[in-house]
Image 1 (cartoon, one colour):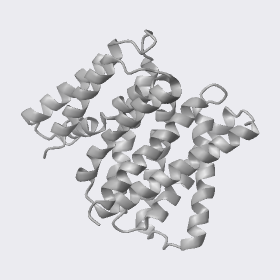
Image 2: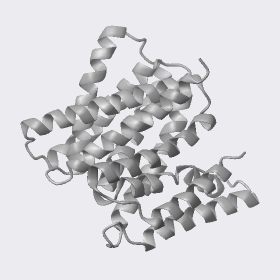
Image 3: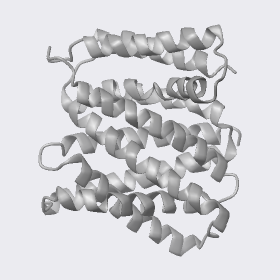
Image 4: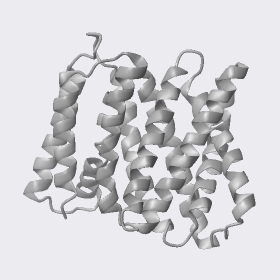
Length: 280
């Protein structure tokens, strides 16, 4: 079924959007580092059950460094995005995260000494102009947006973009279950000292919420890995923008936050810039 990878990708984005909404609802009692750590701990439990059932082939030794690097990038991306959604609306956090393709273009120009095309410069101007619109504007309550939250969303975008590149490479050789297993185990180990440092004993009901966060994350990762194993990254990447539609609905229905004009203008500029930057 040719549409399957695209349906899987859309479903994965939806599950991760709901996951981030649950994370945002836990922003008061728990630090984002503890939330992220518990997400990967519970996620490891979920995925180990699937591994015991399917018994997938483990990666070759030559690929282990790439799996570990992807796990580290996932830990950075997930934790910084959790910090972002605690400080911003979901729509604003997702909009800033759409800068990922533009950061890849910028890094290529800076470090690979590639000659910029005119369309690259236009794309970068649109993307970062859109971010400036969001940075300079106010949120739905009329307060200035958190610069810390915006910076965290931008860092998450860079780490996520690099992680997707590795995902496409590894998905050609390893089972999607194996990919998600190494992602969660590596992230849990790396985040352990930070999670313990800010530890607050979870309430029993909140433990169920952490298990739900992990379950949504694992299911989303499995769907995304399966999708990227069946279709080119360039064709699936634009579907990430559906997160903005999910975020707008969740902000309004769950958190009572209305959409701000600055977010619409900024998102339009960033998405247009990202689409232009992807035209190679």
